[in-house]
Length: 101
Image 1 (tube, rainbow, N blue to C red):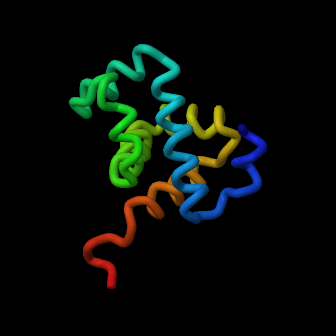
Image 2 (cartoon, rainbow, N blue to C red):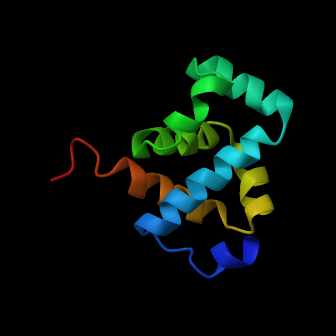
């Protein structure tokens, strides 16, 4: 998987969604990380898959990573990405800020 993302580190819909889905898988791969994420989001295993289909939720997954630099760096390394590429994917999914034209 790392190779397929490495060449696509620009912000586009497919890249951004792929990064977010991989981030969710990264979180889910560790029971402690997953428990913390589920506690903070209020989601459970029964509705996590449904939530993952929502682009706004995918943006929130990357928001969650961005709030914890160590977690962001660990994910980026695991995915073979630069943290900046994860940040670009996050911004793409979130859309323009409310104060931007």
